[in-house]
Structures are given as C-alpha cells and as structure tokens.
Amino acid sequence: MRTVEPGFGSRELVGGIPEWSVSVALVVDGEPVVGGICNPATGQSIVGAAGRGVTLNGRPARVSGRPELAGATVAASRSEVKRGEWAGYRDDLFTIRPCGSVAYKLGMVAAGLVDATWTLVPKHEWDVAAGVALVRAAGGAIVTASLEEARFNRHRPKLSRLIAAPPQLVPAIEAEIARRDTAVAAR
Image 1 (cartoon, rainbow, N blue to C red):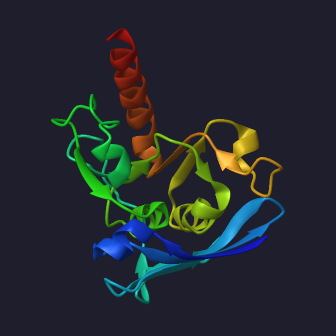
Image 2 (cartoon, rainbow, N blue to C red; image 1 turned 90 degrees about the vertical axis):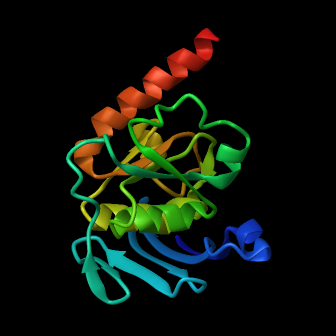
C-alpha cells in the first residue's frame, strides 16, 4: 500500500493554525516502513525509513530520551481536548499540548519535538501510516489495541488505540491511561 494524504488537519489549515501536514507512507506486507510528513506552515519535513533512521529538515532526529512521564509534553488532539475528553489526566504529571493533525503529532514524536501522543478515538490507518513508520524508525514504540491492529492493509482499516512514545515511557503511559479511565468510569 502506498498512501498520500494531502491534508491532515484541514480545520487547522482553514483556521490558520500551523498544525496541518502532508503525509506520505509506504506499507510493505502490512508494515509501515517509509514515512514522510511535511508541515508547510512551519517548514518542517520529517522523513525516515526502517533501518535508516529519521531526519528533521535533513538533520538526524530521534524520539525523546526522557526517562519518565513526569515533566513530559504530550501532543493531544485539539478536538478531543476541546470536547473535554482529556479531562481527568493528571496535569501535574505532564503537559498536554493540543495539536490538530494526527500525522503531525506522530511526526513530532519521531523527531523528539514532543515526548508522546495517544489517541482517544479510533483512527484510520491511512491517517497514521507515515507517522507509525517514522516513530518506529526513530527508535520509538507504537502500541495498538491488538496485534491485528498493528498490521496495516486490513479489511477494517481502523485502529481503536494508538500510543506513540519512547519505549521507556510506554508502561507509565499505559498506567496513566488505565488510572484515568477507571476514574472516569467511577463518576
């Protein structure tokens, strides 16, 4: 599968918010292996491939080396934040940075510009293929709801869960998501 998404973050583009992007991915045998995300508004180009690493505007980049979730910057869907879906996360633990395009959020994780991102609503695989390839190429971890969802080009191309972060942050992120979900369910 080859995917080109010409405009992630169309609300941001129309609103003049510099958080939209163009995204290109190559998926081979169900695995996103090459990705490119360009944000023309900021002049950022994030490109990479499995086994080759990632560059930000031609310079080598990697996922954050942050050792713990405390003090992290987490890119969150601007729409999800606006709807109150991020309420209940411990704002004393990490900073939530609202951002439009899911592809751009994943690219920022890959380039180490933010520490992590995760989704609270399902995403189509074509929305995240380039970012998934980049995060993996930059040494990051991608967590989906199941092994089946980790494969692309499926009959049902939606991912119900997606976490992108440096591997060392994943256990703390999963614990924080579980804590928040339990607190929300108890209300």
